[in-house]
Image 1 (cartoon, rainbow, N blue to C red):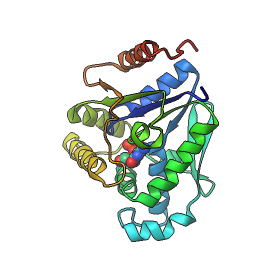
Image 2 (image 1 turned 60 degrees about the horizontal axis):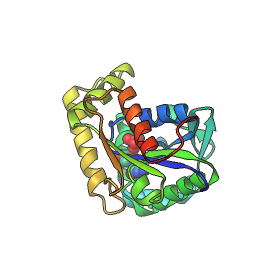
Image 3 (image 1 turned 60 degrees about the vertical axis):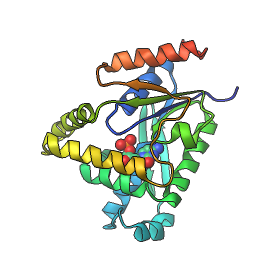
Length: 227
Ligand code: DC
């Protein structure tokens, strides 16, 4: 077998990135946060004064944005036209913009192509919405990580508080529900659970417990988890 690929999909705030990072550290594998790629494109458009929810504007400008991903140890740097936008990706505005741009098929085709190229180059853990269904349907193991909207909103609200964004918990919950709806109802590659994915509901689990469950499922499937 060539490279090992591990797919982690699920809605926003389910803890995909945190679990993927922890799994990557434990197994000494690279981790690609594909959401950061949609976010970086949205952040670049916003910086240029362009509206990520305007399909025509996004498609007219897509060719002007060259997105690259670099890794420094466990840290992913997502660059657009050579500029590292990683520190600017987690505001509410960029979150909404990322969900907006992710609806457009040419944007998805551009980013999915890059994700597949990376996954061909070495073993990877990828997290996103469509990894197990579209990007790498042949992944060695697939996890679908979820949690109740209330749990996800509380986690996100805590993160935003730490960054000084003064949104109420109700506003964050409304935002999460709106993004869930948009991500699950878009025509191209909507968020959904692959038939052969292992579903893990993290509402009542600590991140260590999520990690242990993933490692147990990998072992049960005969995948090497001793790194
Ligand atoms: O995982 P995240 O919250 O950082 O993702 C940001 C947005 O990008 C999310 O609203 C949906 C979109 N996305 C996607 O459509 N496909 C992916 N593989 C990853 C993210």
